[in-house]
Length: 409
Image (cartoon, rainbow, N blue to C red; front, side, top):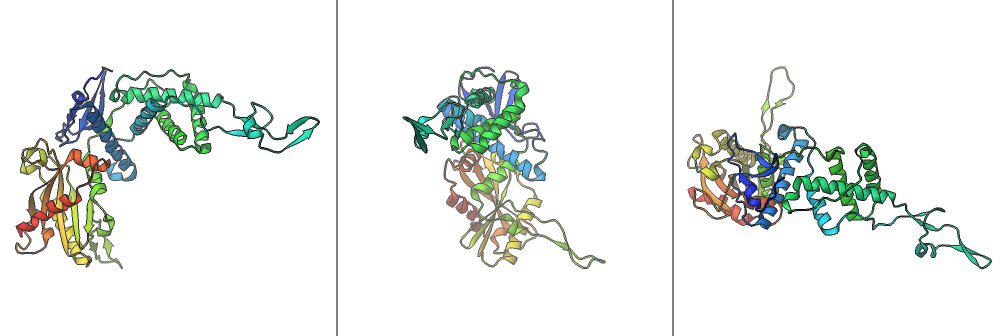
């Protein structure tokens, strides 16, 4: 792989058009490319750019978890075994700080064969025979052959991690190992046994990450580098907004309908509508719909949510109004990505109100705030930093921005 002197040079930002909606890492022959989601401002400084790429990798792992947990995401990245990028990062960071594995968690057995550990043995029971002290159950240090194998596995996995993501950290020499491909299952057995019997947290984390990398490689360190990303970042955007701003279980607020059919004793329930994110504060409740749309980067009205999205938000508001008595004010908002440093609105805050949507079938003099859906622009880098807990979520600013729609009443 070509040497990378400036990380920003290998980065670009997706436009979210059908032929340019990939977000993640791509390996292209002898080079690598990093694709950020729409609205992301890629830092110029190498250190900050590295942090951004690592943050991006963490969000891609969200998508892989969503695939496993919900069938609606099943065509996101296919059914291939997940590439353990988080394990690559952990292994490289640990290797740079601590070097290769050495067993610091000594295990002792009461046995008759092997090297005696006299410090522990002298504290056990003994009897005197003539002028000699006889120890019936000496402590014997464990054979170190297995430790040497784990060191080899560690070196092997460090090499794979460097192949995948070493370019983030500069030129890291790959340590040598004595791994034999045909012994792959044996190596996994050793790791599994050590994971069960280890009580040292650092060692256990190391072993678990080694196992993930070993399972991914299949024992073949010459396997080609697989891309790591998604063409459906909208699911990740939705998930992050919910994690950063949601504080209610959305399944408590599902509107539904029922059919009363001839020949059926009981009503038949139709599928339910599902809001993305619910935020409640005191007597106010906010219904947030995460839209990974292009409007924040184009200012083109046809890149805004359609009428069916507006209708659903109003329906959620009506459902809450009619079924929950503990909320005085109900607000609606679309959350759309943008770049606070480069946008056609000439706006510069992380969170910005840019208007609202309303329906033509509702009473124009209604006092239901939820009937006007605020359009909120949210800086993409800021959201990812909030999700990774690098910064505060600006909740007060988000709430104040949504409430600007009250001025329209």
